[in-house]
Amino acid sequence: MGACQGKKMSTINDVSRLAGVSKATVSRVLSGSRGVKEASRLAVLKAVDELNYRPNVIAQSLLSQSTGCIGVICAQENINQTTGYLYALEKHLSQHQKHLLLRFANTKSAVLNALDELNCGLCDDILIIGARFALDIDQENVVLVDCMEAEAENVNSIQFDHAFAAETACNYLISQGRRQIAMIQPKGSGFADQVLLGYKHALEKNFLPFNRNLVFLEATSSSVALQELLNNSATVNFNALMVADEHEAQHIIPQLQAFNKSVPDDIMVFSLGGSLQLPGVPVIPAIEYPIEAMAARIVNWLTQTTHDMLGTQLMRGDLFIPDVRRKANR
Image (cartoon, rainbow, N blue to C red; front, top):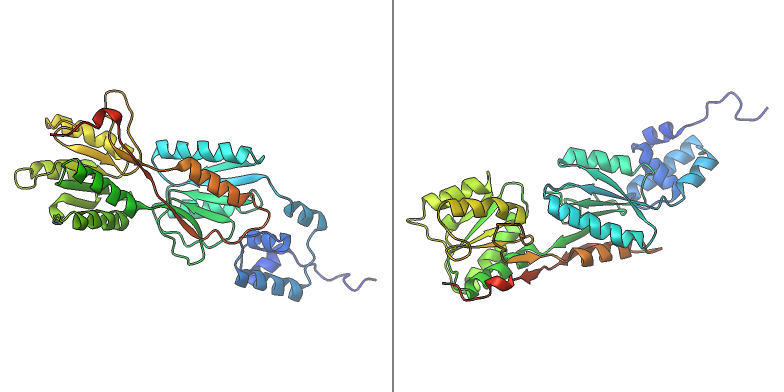
């Protein structure tokens, strides 16, 4: 009889339990996949040795094959930006015979659950887009795209330079004679600290005082913040208003018009995240981010045979000025 006869064979569950990691992590280590912490990899290998675990050869060979899929977890609420990301990514991925596997998640726990699901052999790499909450993720096969700053040190991340965007916006508004600039960043929009930093830099460079009464960070809603601004217009004057993105502008502009404030003559509205082009709504100046260039950079990294950590990269947006609004303002 063989030496192993009558002895219970170890399973992947046993390895997972002994190593203190998930079964998905065990599978990734055994298949040689990226995205595993070194400490976890060593723990799995040690458990495999102690248990004399022998994985199913067919299953192991299947796991080692590329799935041809890139997981995408959309965590932002702005549907226009989400559509832009997905269109650009699909366009560039299709050129490399790669496909998207899409999940939507708007909470931290939902994102982590989706990540665990996609990591179980469904995808080669995973992108998390637009999370407005910190994520403690340092897996080599995960890229955070336009997400809040990660808690982990070793992270693949591509972010927009929000401080530079706010500074550019302020400089443009000041050049148009708009020196009383209000700013609204509703709760959950993210990057408030970076936006405020760019805002203050622009005021300082243009020798303008910082008025705390013009700034609403983490407001319950943009509408409530604007209501307070308008109610205090007798003591707090403003002739320009910076908002987080086109989605916020869509709510702000009708509210201004309801108070007989014309856009842009009385108040110039500026979007820090894309232009607004809807029927009946004034086209406003904005920061337009190079989503196509971002998608190309991401896909180029994903499709390399071997590559180092992507690290944290910043991308700056372009100033968009509507042609019809280039005339001098009052």
